[in-house]
Amino acid sequence: MADKEILAANEQANEAAANGAPQEEIGDVQIADEVLSIVASLAAQEVEGVAGMNGNFADGLSEFLGSKNVSKGVRITVEGHVVSAEVFVNIEYGGCIPEIALEIQEKVREAIENMTGYEVKIVDVHVQGVQRRRKTELEQSLEAENN
Image 1 (spheres, rainbow, N blue to C red):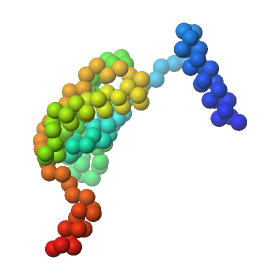
Image 2 (image 1 turned 60 degrees about the vertical axis):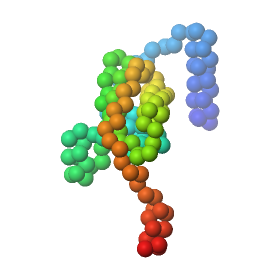
Image 3 (image 1 turned 180 degrees about the vertical axis):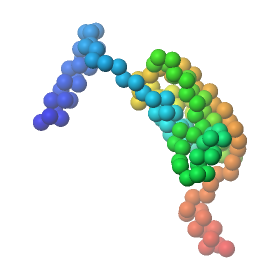
Image 4 (image 1 turned 30 degrees about the vertical axis):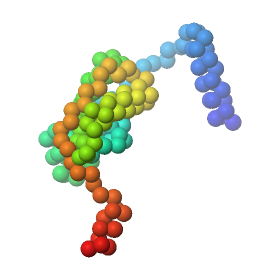
């Protein structure tokens, strides 16, 4: 029953906002830069042709020590609710770099804006390297059978 009430209240608030009614302000929501970095990194990694994220020395050291840095390869700058992102990636060999970079820009912008409501001013993509695509488990098992 409570779920229906919450949904109804949300729907009423959305209708009021759409009709230009002022919304009650109950506080501000602050999203940590690290959260924005994680969102951007995960969005970039979803793009076909991205072999991996390319971080800095600190990212490499923490990974070496066993901690996984999910925000690796992303630098975020936030001014108010406006975000600028720099994404550092390695591309799979054979991929069209300009097309992959454009898709990264679109995915990162869309993910940050949809998940946070923040405006994305710019997404710079830095292609740091080219790597061979990693073989899937199936490809590895077929190769092992043939040898």
